[in-house]
Length: 276
Image 1 (cartoon, rainbow, N blue to C red):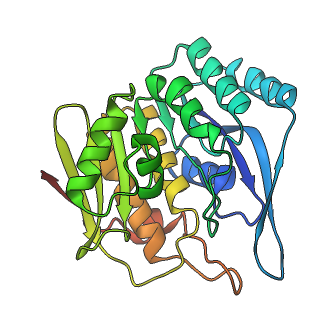
Image 2 (tube, rainbow, N blue to C red):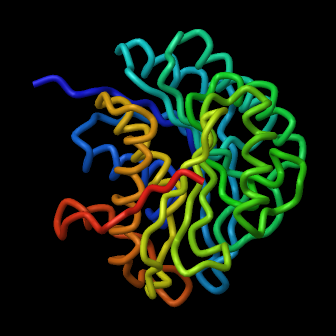
């Protein structure tokens, strides 16, 4: 048996719902083999659930990447990259790997926080990561940061942001609208430089969605590694994360993670695709 090998360069979420933990669970559910290069460790205050971010030394990150790449990886996904040096290191690793299957999840804040980890990281992502991305997967806030437009609040504003992000070099831009838009559905937008595709699913009443962003980006990566084209990889990932959110559960008084095994256990929800 041979599995596709995926490297995630991202942070560790001690609570287990997001970061490399979400990536590895998602890769497993898609029949792929995940490897990790940790950038940071994120912990939470048990009394308030406020986050602390501990960066790993850059030489440790480089050594991890070297180990994983030596096995002959098929795809790379990035997540939380906390400094400009870390972003440049990830970008150089992607360039040296010569891989085309690269998904950039431009994580800028921790769940429940509202400050960009490091303002300089936005420019660094634009310089080192977006030109190497087959797919970049910002949420609404991240899309606004990368596009320099402010957070999109409508489909038209999402389209404008996607165009600006695409101009930075990303081949495909997938903006995760989710529940953030004032619409009857959970809507996400894909832009390939020519056409816009809207992916819609029924909004879930479940508020336990910790790790959803990492999960959909990881699912896209796994689907691409398994041979799907971008449009189908995104569509299947949308089904995966929609099921995961609908079956999310309460971890404690502060957070509830998505359930990564939901689609394979309960089946795929309906997702509609519309050219817009």
